[in-house]
Image (cartoon, rainbow, N blue to C red):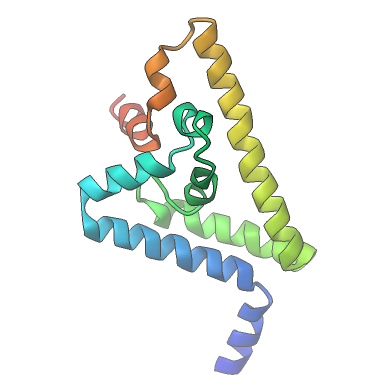
Length: 141
């Protein structure tokens, strides 16, 4: 029975690895406290400042760090989608699709924010806003 479960999980190994990494990162950040959480989130935030200064490592890090820490709400659905994609496309194509989607979405949002700042629709301070600051301000409404 355990061997059957492991065999099935092996078919979605990228999905399982991603879920384990995100969970471990979230638990570690929670255990380290709010100061460390804010520093890490600020470092991996895909804000305009980090992207403009060539902090491309933020793209990788931001895929594994959640700003709100409530992965138990979103992760199950994401795991289901990733597992389905991995079963249909295999592991390599899933990684490629995930990476392109993550980078593409980041760049689309960055272009939109840069344009909004340039046209005066948003303040320049938004360029340095971390994901946690944006999440907290949205939550307080």
